[in-house]
Amino acid sequence: MTLLRCGVLLLLSLCLAGCPKSTLNLHQGISNFKAQNYRAAFVRLMPEAKKGNADAQYAVGYMYYYGQGVVEDRDKAWDWISKAAKQDQSDAISALKLMKKERRHPYSKK
Image 1 (cartoon, rainbow, N blue to C red):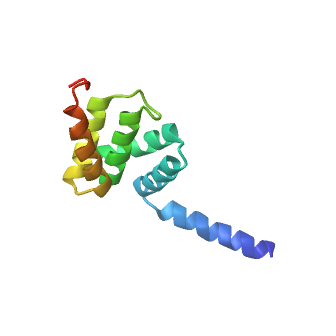
Image 2 (image 1 turned 135 degrees about the vertical axis):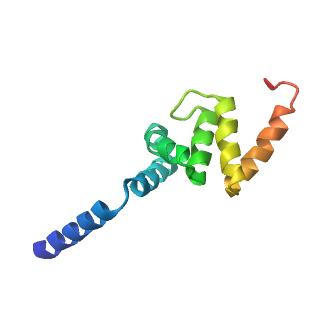
């Protein structure tokens, strides 16, 4: 049984070594995001957002919007969510619609 476990671990290690770092960062970042470990998610997803990944852009925007893992910044949130929406990321499109309504609210900053 231990030989089988060693074989599985070796195979898994080889697979992970063959994965591009950005793919690994993206998957780990999304897992951190779903687990509400926002600081770790932000650290992993920001580089992917800068590279143009729409899911990462939406997640970074979400974290800026709610101040999860970063200092709340609605302008940065708007920028990142807009970028994701331009790439047809469905959650970003929905969020952008809500944000547009909020910005017209008489008590909003803008």
